[in-house]
Length: 427
Image 1 (tube, rainbow, N blue to C red):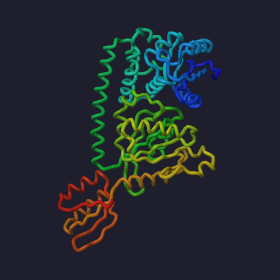
Image 2 (image 1 turned 90 degrees about the vertical axis):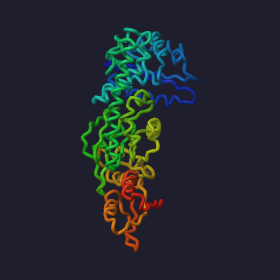
Image 3 (image 1 turned 45 degrees about the vertical axis):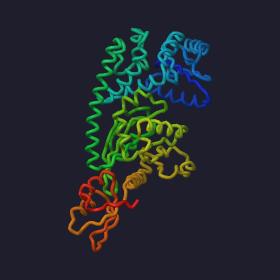
Image 4 (image 1 turned 180 degrees about the vertical axis):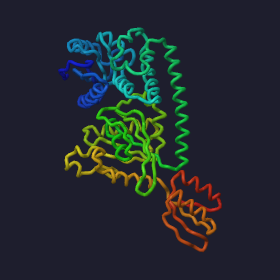
């Protein structure tokens, strides 16, 4: 147990539990991250408690004895709220609040609270409200008007908190309304994405752990002037900007919401339409905070979310950011094949990254061989326009070409060929 002497802002006591084979050291690491989340939410951690258990207690998660111990410490430190690193069931939350005599919430509630504070667009606010209501709906039972006493604390802010005092039916009506609204927005976004796909401009998404430097990288590559702050989840609303590559090709580069360990399922579901941009991308730029001691765990957390949204099969470039904070001997070791070390803040490594993006997109295209009759100058022009002509030589039957085509360009060329000319893959 660690005590921190603070006497301002909402006072928070953290609780972490090592279940099964998890070590107390890993629990402490996750509590460090939870403390950052609490700070981002605007509160102050004044203490923490850790425990080892074979399995969570169904009634209180930590067992009645430990719950009594936490209650005494919470009284001693005069905390406002006890925050658990693991998700609590509604029954566990109610039981703990009876024992503590104060609010008990979990990591999910803290993350939802941060999202509620940082969502600015109409779509972002609707997505967060839907996640909040889906999380709070099962927790209304047995609480009644007592929730109104918690307004202004972590886990109670944001769009939708006034609905907590309405009956279940009205909450469910609101959830249904938000789902319809988001489904309509998703349809419009899908139409826009299809339009971009028809334009054959490659789509690249920047993904990574929260605060890894994704928005800073978008600014460095495109001069986007996206908000950049040194705090978790500073930017929730995605931004898409056009990037011109040195070879003249253009692509659409999108910055996405940051991921985190134990990202609430409610948020993944609510942000489905936003995250579809990632799963439909031609390439991912996976930004990692190279200076973080937990970078391997953060990479695993990001890949877990990518798998959940159906984006695990999208090719990626690993980009290790903030190398300006590393010791020279660590930087000299490098970061592996198809990985790039950069400092988005200083601009170091950005030209190399742009080269890697060009190469990665080029690898996505296949090389095809065909012979075009001399009277089909329109087709030769289309091949130059739609793809990359690797070689061209004249034969007695026509012009023999090797051309690199991506998936969308291939469709346009096949339509022009009309089945009269064979398009053979060389790969």
